[in-house]
Amino acid sequence: MYVQQESSDRPRRLRSTPAVRRLMAEVRVHPASLVQPLFVAESIEHPDPIPSMPGVVRHTLESGAAAVRRAADAGVGGVMLFGVPEHLDSQGSGADDPDGILNRAIGMAVDAAGDDLVVMADTCLDAFTDHGHCGVLSADGSVDNDATLRRYADIAAAQALAGAEVLGLSGMMDGQVAAVRAALDGAGRPDVAILAYAAKYASAWYGPFREAVSSQLSGDRRTYQMDPANRREAMREAGLDLAEGADILMVKPALGYLDVLADVAASADLPVWAYQVSGEYAAIEAAAANGWLDRDALMLETVLGIRRAGASAVLTYWATELAERLST
Ligand code: PBG
Figure (cartoon, rainbow, N blue to C red):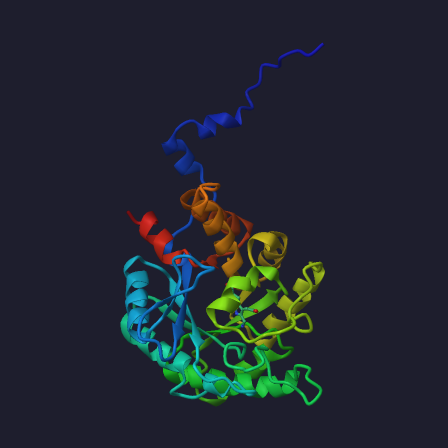
């Protein structure tokens, strides 16, 4: 027979009122721990909506400046800039051209931001190459790791010159952190920080992003991005990036990889961030548009979950909107 125990162990005590719950919260989302990714496209006259990412656009330089200002005014911690160039080639030469769209966008963002938020840029080749890979190709069509490192070194130097304060190394080439650190130091820019996408998985959650940057990729990135099956390998990647001089480690995507995020956060002695990617955003937006999910609630709940798993900051397409909601 079941006997009701008199219990003094009543966790519901600490859930009783909004004020109690607020005081008991173990983690919080603050505007300053959000990073807003922004796309800036060359040769467009007006902001260009991205169909698979409702509410997200490819910006002109002018509308991008306004988006940076809006993020800064909302207290967002930083912006991560991606460029969408008009001309592509095998080497991705637009990426290190000082007049290339991303480097111009960096200058625009630095001017718009003042000292109010941190300007970061994606240091990769995929949006600039006519084959869509994150590196340059060998004669046999495979991605040439070490030739790519030389490209990243040049891109990093150009981005630092343009004014980027943090470089996001998203290409998953072996040795990329060491190569970029050496290039920055060699260019007299030891002050520029490296955000290493330490554990970046070959994920179907990036689909809408590829539309956003008009990616030319056919095939996949499985020879450089990680296998979604692997958790232990993330620790190896994180350890290498740490040893090579990373300043911040990132796990990406976020929601499907919270175990990896928790592992990296538990063992690293430097900041660990996560990227709530385009497909995570698109899935919730699409379901919400059908009335099936509550986007406003999920915006906070998902970012909170990513914070709880160990991310000190989160890249999310909702950053500015969420920051505005949190500060009102
Ligand atoms: C590539 C890059 C990707 C994203 C950021 N940097 C796409 C990819 O690896 O194919 C994805 C971001 C997102 O989906 O929001 N350098």
